[in-house]
Every structure is written in structure tokens, then in C-alpha cells.
Length: 263
Image: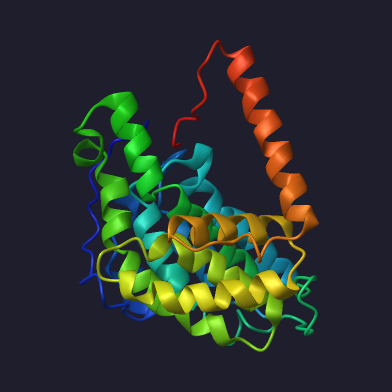
């Protein structure tokens, strides 16, 4: 578990400053990552806007890898997430070859991968992870885990950028944005968006065959108190049975322990 103290000055949670402002106002060299400090992150983040897909694809690992290791939240994760959110509408990010096929990601779509990363990181800092951390490490888990707490505080600013893509022309982008938005709206300032996301979720479930997208939105709908029986298809039912068998096998092999650590 990584407990750390963020040294980057964070904006008000509902505000998202411009990318360059975030980049220039952050003391990257002072922030911990999985493999040292973040002095190389500004260059990698800037290269994400390259019109050359080979450069932007390479920059993804350089920008996100150091702050993503083993599902942990590091000191540098929050400023990286805010920079990524600020980059989403940059012309260079949206320059992939977008079709309207909901089943296929756009070619060279850095946008989709950045939305995916924001959603996965928010998922690693969601209420379920906090509850599990408190069961494993005590009631002071979130108080001590300052980097995770900082990310959770930044969720409204990140959501403000993700929300704009719920109406994107490309269905796969829309669906990826929805999956990213789901864990973000656990923040108390964002719960009013639940009904809107539920409407988007129904549209996703009516058209998408992406297993990961369907699992995430079905879990969300159930958590929000919706009856999903009429929204599920045969593949969803089969997947649910498969997951139950995997959980049972894990419990058996681990002597009754059935929970994964949140990072």
C-alpha cells in the first residue's frame, strides 16, 4: 500500500484548469511514482497530443505507467489525472479514425485509452475499495492514504471533462466515457448525475457487446437500485455464472478468503 503526501497544489474540486497551467504549476520532481519521481511526466504528457499515432501511443505508457502500477494511487497520480482530463478535448487527442461501430475502438484512439485509464483509476479509488481497505487496514485507511483521498477529492474536476464525451458521435467513445463516469459520480457533489448515467447505461446495454463495458454498467445499475433483469442478455447471464464459479474456486483455494486488496 502506498501512503503518500501530495505536494502539488490542487484546484477547487469543481474546476479544471487548462492543461498547460496544470503542467507548469506542478512540482513534478517532488512527486512520488511507482518507480521514483515524476520529473519525466511533463514531456510524456505533452507528447500525448502528438498528431503522430506512433508517438502518442508510446507516450501513453511513459505518462501513465509510472502512476498506475499494481492499482495503487501515487502522489503523481492526481496531477496526471487532471492533466489527462484537461487534454481530452485537445484536437490531437480526437484525431483517431472514428467509425460509428459500437463494437470497435477507433484506430489510434488515444482518447479512448485516456478515458479508460481515468475510469480504471477512479475504480481503484471507489467506495468499495475504501470499504475493503478499512476492513483490511482499519478505520484510518483513507486518512492515511493521502494520495487516494486527493484523487477522490478531484473527481468533480475529472468528471467535468469526461461528461462532455457522453454524447460523442462514436458509440465506443460514448460507452468508454460512461464507464469512466460511473465511479466518478460516487462523489457527493456528483450523485445528481446518476439518473442521466442510468439512461446512458440502458442505451449501452441495448447495443454494445463489449463484455467489460456491460459488466461495469450492469454493476452500477444494480448498485443504484435498478432492476436489470430485462436489460441482461444471454451473454450477461453466462458471464455472471462464470464469475460465480471463479469466486467459488478462489474461496476454496484460499481457505475462505474471497476479497482482493484494493490496490
